[in-house]
Length: 68
Image 1: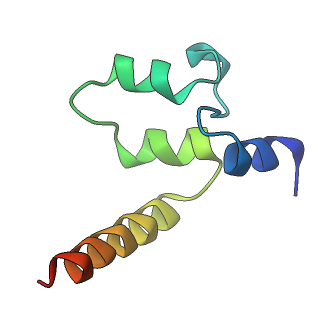
Image 2 (image 1 turned 120 degrees about the vertical axis):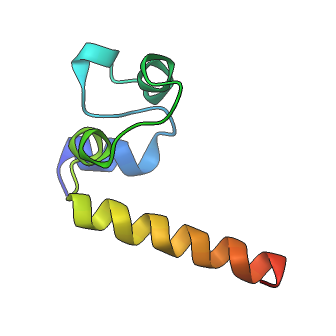
């Protein structure tokens, strides 16, 4: 695992994008209405497909916790 990947997984506020000072908080400030999958994939060094998989997994967990 590269240093950037390790930081992405281990540090809550780290993203791979100097424009936003490598801060997910700064990124969210820029996109208060939501961040596009393409941008999320880029700053987390993953594919758009992986973004969708993570999203779907989170939705399923929420549904299960809500009993839906």
